Image (tube, rainbow, N blue to C red):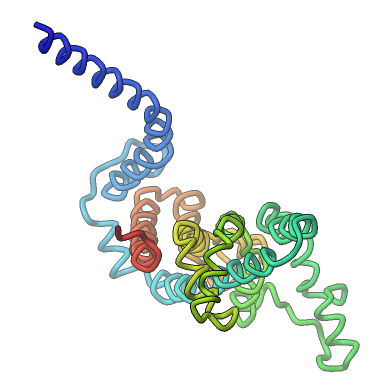
Length: 307
């Protein structure tokens, strides 16, 4: 009888532990469902429909995807090349810059480190304000623009250049501004990761023959902060593929002039909120989701834990 009683108490304890664990996971599960799982499911469903925000969605099969692959010349001629170029430069470039800045800040005293970290983080925190005020002033297409004023004063040009309206310059300016504001939440995560590395690892490594700071970064710093490196990589990838608002903020139009700064997110906004073709916009968003997923898997391959 005593054995049966102990066995029953064990079952009750296990059940109560399960209920307790479920209670802890419930808030995360609700937030994940509301903000991630359900929107993705709705987007996938709408991508197979014709939906104009007025009438109910009408099932259209693969029509939106066929249109995307065979008839959307703007997507393949402008949007996709722009997005790939932007993402391949801003994603890895911003990631490397964030890591280097975090590593350099970790070498200085706490007080100046905090101030400099806030200054570096500020552009990503208030990106719209900086883009709208600072960068549009710098690249303004009249004599009041700083770049044009300098070029005119040096007699390098005769008339102001329309930097933000020119297909020749807009995408490159978008890349420059994005790299300038690359120190986002991933930068803070990497800074925290570097600061939490056990100093004894460095001392032991130098005793074992470590010779310089570069080897220190390769053999100690990066392997010791793989979770933060992975988080920073994912945030850089997501930010690079979803930073289309910068082109609209700089040029003041969507579509951007001659689609020169048009990224996939701009294409989605164009069809979804300007043309009200929500079904087709959902199909493009699913394509973007697949691209982000592929690059995120690559990031996990490099920085994910395998044990």
